Image: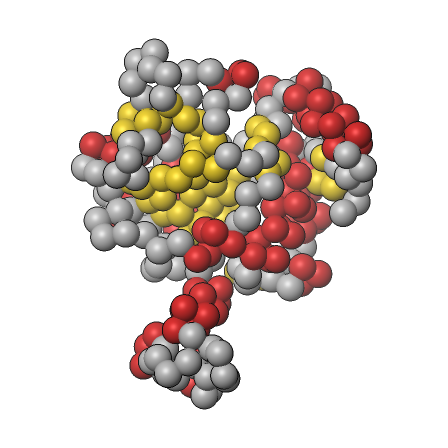
Amino acid sequence: FGHTAPFGHTAPFGHTAPFGYTARNIAASVRSVLMKAMILAAGRGRGMVPLTDSIPKPLLRVGGKALIQRQVEKLADAGFRQLVVNLWYLGQMIEAFLGDGNRWGCEISYSWEEQPLETAGGIQRALPLLGPGPFAVVNGDIWTTYDLGQLLRHELTAGCLAHLVLVDNPPHHRRGDFHLPEDGRLRTRRENGPDTLTFSGMAIYHPDFFAGAAPGRRRLLEPLQEHMTLGQVSGEHFRGKWEDVGTPQRLAALNAELRRKGVGDK
């Protein structure tokens, strides 16, 4: 209250700010309209065979709901209104399931890939749909209690082109991915070091993070290493529940745990 809103308005869309409406509230409201989120859903899911022989991995059910449905619901609940989903393997099933996103109060666009482009290649292909500003990216095959509203509220610090959410190393990935020092700027993994963390598959990127690369297949690790060397990647450590549903065994274990906790179609 009493502060000037972004873009010189006193409140979103030029209206007068109500009592208690702060510049922070207004900025968050504007970001929810402008900031888009991408769900990665194009992969083959080879580790989930035979479950993925006839169904794409993001449509596998956890706690009574498809994995990708949970991501859409969490993003919509967090305030994201425009989502992009990349598709390749059995993508028509995912598009038929999600539709235009209207039932979740958001708009879903699709970025089709003629061949698998890996993570960086898939995001780069979708850039025209994601707009000129920073955007969030979430893997379509993870389960977590992380508040995706954190991504909407986070602002990339000066000089940073990406911000990654890291988690404790799971049993199937004890070596971890990256080192998060006190300054918050990520470093590559220290060989056999005990202080590494695992990338959760949740992040924010600026389009410039992908600048200069030729279109086509590209792993995310390549630009990450390039920009980490320049100190352009920040991170945070999430200590809550996170699961990479990468094998039938891990899927079964997660569903069993959720049943014990009474988690169904919630």
